[in-house]
Image 1 (tube, rainbow, N blue to C red):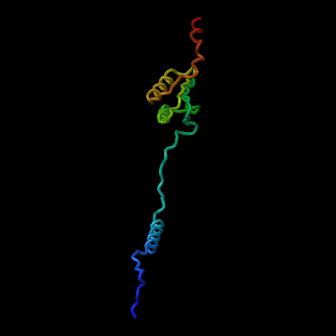
Image 2 (image 1 turned 90 degrees about the vertical axis):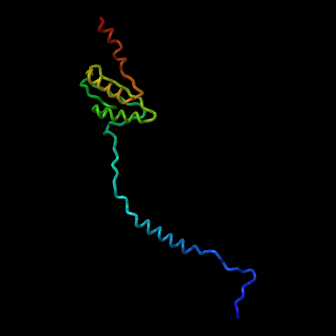
Image 3 (image 1 turned 135 degrees about the horizontal axis):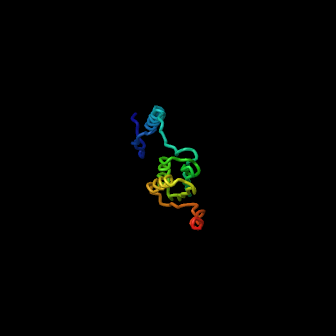
Length: 142
């Protein structure tokens, strides 16, 4: 006897995608397992040193009577000072830079520091503590 089809039944023409998805998931898992772990290292340059932090509001450069420059209280060389100043010019907004030489600070140390500051391109710059010497001319005139 021949098989007869129901009048409204038609053969299914859709592709069964379940085995295809299973194979793709297995391949994905194998691919993830075979990826090597990241073992390389990346060297990251850190700030100039302890105590030589850059503040976002204002930074102070002071010169003492021996001619030693300090950045926010920590001693710095002229090259360290130049790198710290370059870092401040990249901050937005650029922090204010305050220059406070001591009354007995050597002129050449103050001039070198001012030259370094000028070369860095700092825009917000000011002298601090000059009011202490406001009556200097009055005392020497007597």
